[in-house]
Image 1 (tube, rainbow, N blue to C red):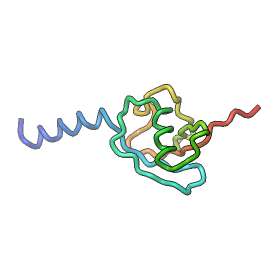
Image 2 (tube, one colour):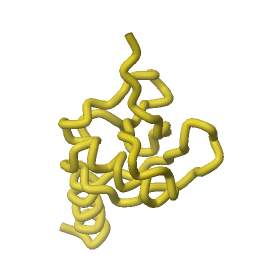
Image 3 (cartoon, rainbow, N blue to C red):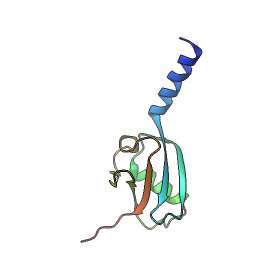
Image 4 (cartoon, one colour):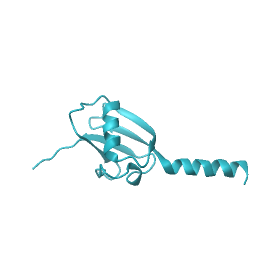
Length: 98
């Protein structure tokens, strides 16, 4: 295996374990690039972490919405199963209307 092939194989392996994406709060006031987030982390845990990083109120439950599909991410499923690398997501407060 050449050095280039070995490097590509290493990068491919790293890409399967982490994902990077852009996140903004619902108002667009805060925007962060989340780099190398473990793909197997539950989306709910990632939302909580992003809320802390954006200095959002901690007494509010937060959810993530994929901007390309407008779908809310399932908080219990791994984030890497729900978004593509480079995705844009919105951190939004969870509301239960009705």
